[in-house]
Amino acid sequence: MNEPLAERVRPKSLEDYVSQNHLVGEKGTLTQQIKKGILPSLILWGPPGTGKTTLANIIANTSGRPFYSLSAISSGVKDIRDVIDKAKQSGGLFTTKNPILFIDEIHRFSKSQQDSLLGAVEKGWVTLIGATTENPSFEVIPALLSRCQIYILNPFGKQDLEALLQRAMEQDEYLKKKDIVLKETEALLKLSGGDGRKLLNIFELVISSESGDKITITNDLVLSKVQKNTVLYDKTGEQHYDIISAFIKSIRGSDPNGAVYWLARMIEGGEDVKFIARRMLIAASEDIGNANPTALVMANTTFQAVTTIGYPEARILLSQCAIYLATSPKSNASYMAINKAQQLVKETGDLSVPIGLRNAPTKLMKDLGYGKEYKYAHDYQNNFVEEEFLPDSIKGTSFYKPGNNQRENALKEFLKNRWKSKYEF
Image (tube, rainbow, N blue to C red):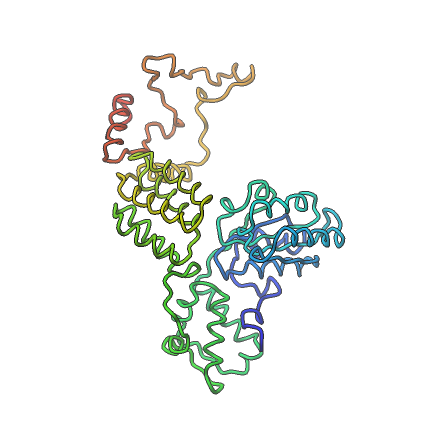
């Protein structure tokens, strides 16, 4: 029993795979592709322990393809080239038997390492499957991203995690010898942080530390057996989300002291510098917006700078930006405007573009009146003429309501002076 429980009960087929029904359920987007063995290169994006590696292995097993695996933590360009050379010899170009190259934590690959994959993916020497816990839009180079489909794995819910425990008790030879009663699971689920791998390994630790074959799992038993050292910051667990939440709420609440404290907690815990800077970039628009547009410029400059500098000096830039954002005037007007507009789009569907606003590149379109009634703003005094730009059925709808701050009060007056019949605040 040298293998950890999570490895011993790793699913080998879609039937045993827990959760992610939107991908591999009966009507999942990947199900038929996996069964047919005809797959594009793809990137699996989701939290730790949600089955990304398992799914990659199932895809390979089901399709009968050669399978090569690399970890971005320990592999370099030479390792990639060696695998690609082997893949070229073991598979045909663009066939259902193309070898699969699985790269765990692909977001850790540098640009040059990702570049080295392009030719093999484009020419069909391999089908790439990358796994990442980070947003691939930020961590994967555009050229490689454009050649891959992105599939999102959802965090495990309570039912998913309990299903993993039940499945382990039913399938693992060691656990089947025990009389295990799951009386309480809250402590197990909380300690796992939603990570299926961690859940099973904690479960095994509790079971193996008990003498006798009859074991009743309770919260007290789990907490007494698991020597849980309270860490300063857990990048893959619950604190990851709690602390970044406290950080952003401190900025939103205009408290620079709170912002710097939670920032320090993340830095000392080894949080990815780009993750912190990216969240400040979002906050600059969501919580500050047009009350101080320079905040977005500041946050974007910080993101670019810390990516180049890295720790330890990046902490100074992060602190400067966090304090600037926390002490800026606040407005969520832009955030609320797009929320309201998107909701209306969902409710009203694809409304027709008013004929005066349509493009008229051909004579036929001009003859049909496309663009005919359009009033060119620059032909009028102050480069403005009151004209309706929304579809007929939602004319007069107002999405943007300026916040109550110095700059947006000026915007409010501008809109009221221009749109006397539309903008009444």
